[in-house]
Image (cartoon, rainbow, N blue to C red):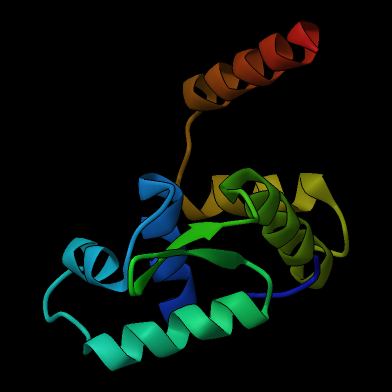
Length: 123
């Protein structure tokens, strides 16, 4: 999977990752105001199916859509693309950038390091 989502597509995927399956109407209900038009959301969902992020099943005369790419897989792929595209593949450069941009202090960094170390030992 090497496909990226537009902002609108990602917004709809975020809703479907939470709901796990939904109709177009149910997706719209979860979107912030001003709500997009039904046809707009329906078109974006069809694009997401073409990109192989979603699939559907027929329920009565309508369709229920569900993700076929999970959020974790997409997140990992997006982070790798970000790291390779802007930080020459260096995780250290990526982390350093976020530390500088967010004015993190030593205590916060130590907390993150403990969490990373804990997760590594759990593997």
